[in-house]
Image (tube, rainbow, N blue to C red; front, top):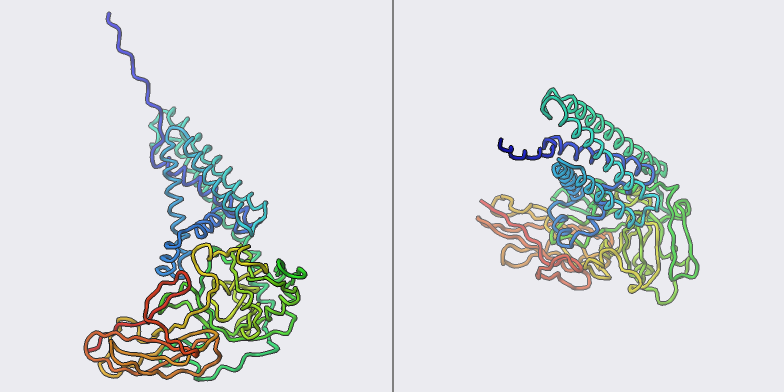
Length: 524
């Protein structure tokens, strides 16, 4: 009798692909929800998702940052949120698919997720050591839930009398019910964490501040300060339209009762102010146009408000600035920082402010409530720290600010620029006389003249709006002859120092864009 050939060992049992992916996604939901819940208590930025997103923002290459600003505008963080969510869901699903026989790979993936969250939170200056509790809990929950669901389904389903994954498999039904329960619980935990975090929001604190009445008011804005009826923006930018460029993935929520401002470093005495110390001082109002260094030629990142606050120089003089100081290194509550030339800060003619309000109201939360820095004539990356809480008087060598590390220059004076607001690019117009209107700015120098031309024709001088002050933009308008066909209309400005903006195009890095703005019009 011949020996029978040895039988092949039974193939190791494997989870169905769909269920394996579901394990990964369910464990991810549980992990993130647990981290969000803990973050509601220890600080919303401790949420692993938010902490990693902030790290992505901080570590992104300069080219990617510029691309996001130019293509996505103020929606860049929304798209980052969506993009990150899609990526981590896919990774979680793949982790499940790679763990169809054993849970080890999935456990490793979730452990890596947790470690990245811990590192992201640990490296944030706005969170104490207790902040790492959120990503640690996220790590533990992710690994445990992944292992729990895997062990629930795999050992039993392959021993069942029916095929695993069939509609009659009781373990499959149990797994699906359990997964649904985990997802529902995750939703509750995530919402609870968000609500707990939101309970600490600043809206109530802002409302309690009330109207801000300055002791020294800015000059009244004349009726002809803009040509809004002719196509320019209004002179004062509505709060909803004021440009916002910052690195905050989640807008900081700082209540007045929790806020303080510390001045230290190269000073005779360290001083700390609370909100009442600032609010109860005689307030000053100044109308200022802010501009972002990332504003491309013709770009939208310039806006105007009447800011209310106190002279920054007064606060520094109370601390006593020592000889040799070069910069004021300002830090936000979320850890972002900017360095301002100390000479500009202390210059009484420039009027640097610690602003607590805009247009009579407390600052909007997204624009820096309770307090921000405003230094006229300098791009925002060196002059406009929002949610400011720390001022370090120091040297350029001792401290390097956020954007200086990423290639921008040290001083940041705003360049003389102009743009066409109406008509918009590629508009169809009637041939003949066409009204063109726009905006020009040369903060702390003032605009003297704006000129417009069609194609290579002669320059013609535009009508300027009334000058409010040298730290604000000026509107302009004129009529030009546009023949039939497609033509380009150019604009250039001359400031009150006699400088006429160059036609040479330069990008925003390292110290602001240059070039003439133009629009293409087609007339029939």
